[in-house]
Image (cartoon, rainbow, N blue to C red):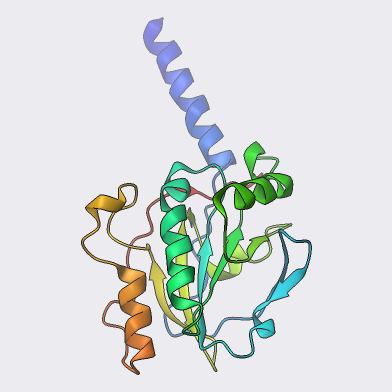
Length: 202
């Protein structure tokens, strides 16, 4: 009897996980040109990449309020924006989660979190979840580095090689890629595995 109950519990948990997990595998690959998008920022303004006419490219990061991996990377995301925005590679953060599937990821929650942490970058709400599937993002955080003028994907993956502990970082994937691009070089490493929480959908 206990065995049957255990199997039922495992089955229910598994089905629940699939119900709230993005299974999209398609999306942009390194070398692809991305489409522009327009999403609402936490200041209620609509933001698109075309607004950044002087940018050399973008560090686009799918992140959220509730995922512990995203929370563990918030200071690193702020540091990336502070280091590279003035050099032409601003951070554009996007919350892809459906707030009905992840209660703490409402637009109001985003405003509160950004204020609490002092975000220096746009924090956009992917309302209706129209943007993240085009990218093929599956985790929070999930990074896409894009270069102008062709809006070409140069790198996809993690921020660095330590998903939770900043003191354990030995390789800074995003920094290395942007530094190479700013030096006119092709990125040495173009893809890594994004580690984080699955994007929540209904």
